[in-house]
Image (cartoon, rainbow, N blue to C red; front, side):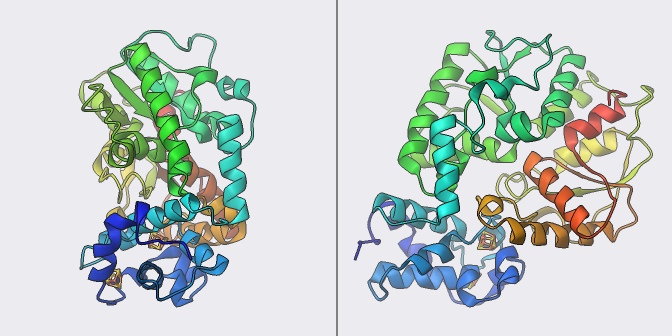
Length: 391
Ligand code: SF4
Ligand code: SF4
């Protein structure tokens, strides 16, 4: 039996022991609610890992699957009164499984293979990554600001990348992108436990940033944002902020800054987002994991819209069901969770749902469709672009 008490999980053994089994973490766990077995809830996962680490339990495919059955939404991490770093421990356990050559769920392996072979989770050609780029935008130029569009906005939600580029241009910002050379940030590899491969990718990305001489790195995807700003340093000691002096921003933070400086404005531009009543869905990786709650809200208000808050917002926001590879591994369940969230938000008297993550947009649109609704779902860049009169 593989020794799971050593390796990546080692630093979390004390956390597992701290669990008092209160069950607070069960309350809003999206996956436990989808399939309500104790082993699917965070409390059950913690008990499984503790027993494995102590050698009280034999590892099995079934147990491995339970540890992967999670959107990495971070609710349990924020909710735990004992300070158990739950979902970090789950990711560390996955890394221990991979390190020991245990079989991980097939759908997760397929996505990992795509990232390693094609540089994106969809198995798309490298050249197609720059399909969204307008002719005026030149990739790989030396510039102080790099816009990292990310896989989802490049291949599946081009409107996000296009609107972001338009807004940065309207602000008069000198920026560049990496185009087809962008590749993957490594988030999927990290979430699924492929830390060695992720580290190599992180080293390559750090080199790219250094060569371009950039000072500010801007992402559309909260997953890329968290990976660059936190995970590279926490897991691999690659400190993009400390060592390269990079400022790492999610696009919502940059938009807020540009609005504050008066470099972009929605007022008087004939935009179409103003006067709308909208609610904001907090993406897990932007809100709970990175604590970015106010910038997207300020941008929505700055775009002239009325913001209606749901009681399940900010750190209590329900997950859209797409994260942690859950969407690719459990498509139907993922849409079921998106439908629940869509129903929750559509219950407000609103004209639209706005979020700040291309993954959330795609999943919530499926959720709205699944409940037979018609509420539009916008990513923040597209919403702001509309307000500025662009779309
Ligand atoms: S909230 Fe924390 S202490 Fe309570 S059951 Fe969950 S992991 Fe254990
Ligand atoms: S991170 Fe979210 S989905 Fe995963 S176990 Fe915790 S609450 Fe559930």
